[in-house]
Length: 352
Ligand code: PEP
Ligand code: MN
Image 1 (cartoon, rainbow, N blue to C red):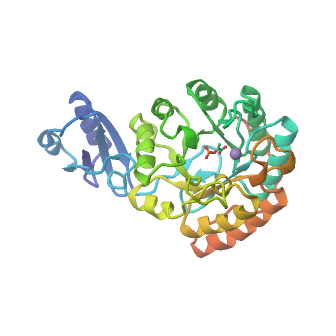
Image 2 (cartoon, rainbow, N blue to C red; image 1 turned 180 degrees about the vertical axis):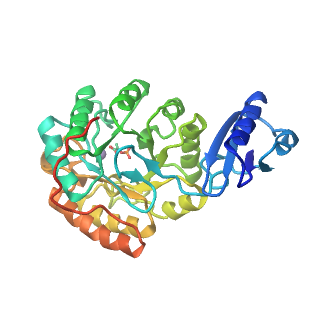
Image 3 (cartoon, rainbow, N blue to C red; image 1 turned 120 degrees about the vertical axis):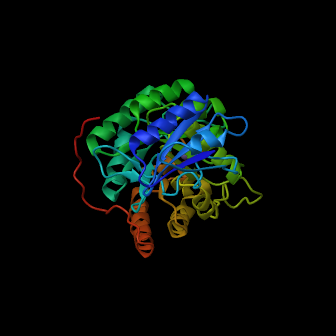
């Protein structure tokens, strides 16, 4: 159910409706929009008795949301969600594209700084790197854990980039929430419902990657888990799905982008690195992702990809990342969107 408030409804009226919903035993989710506030209701098994809410001051109408996902739906919030970060211009959603770049895994301090220096100079506002790696083989490098988080916090201080890194279980989520700026939930955990609920209680934004065989509806339902716990700062990420095709690691499903944008207000990024698994396909698919309307890109970059401990085959050399940025900037301009400038940016020392 959804309570649509009148355009001129006061904050007190919104609060009163929220209190009423709580008294009825449900959970209110106020979603302020450009023209009006809507209040999503979750926790109800059946229909909510409409009359009592409809009669309250400031309420325009109470409507049934027929889709299985509610809070992620444009029915509840018409305007695009923009995730903002205090003290910087970096944002996810909105006109500017969010560029997330960095190695697959944080391997050591020198490696992380070498890559960070280059992606920062190329314009990336977000630095990525796994400290907890979900690997297919238990014998493969599993990540540096807290040490990796510490290195990334140092990178944030030094370059001012925001840090995005993956949590693979509740324990690592506690630590990622403490150290990073955005909590990544990976493809393998897209339907780890207890982890999604924990992410929904986190105080930091979440980047949710599409499961490798997830439908659009399953993907949106996974995001709904996070919003239903009260965390509305969620960005989605298409990273390719399993198909019969074997010329790439996964099949990047760019048709998902306009499909998501039609149904949901959440921003959606594209990860052509995992989506193709091949370095030579990352830049062409990045161009395509921007052309199709993605809200940003997630790109793996390594200064020595042939020595990378994970995903070297799909990691760009820093010079290639410079080229990618120059190319996508031109495509973004056609769509009246912007990509941060490549430049000799001075490292900045900022507080954490
Ligand atoms: C990653 O981004 O580091 C990653 C492991 O991606 P995915 O979960 O999409 O496989
Ligand atoms: Mn990777």
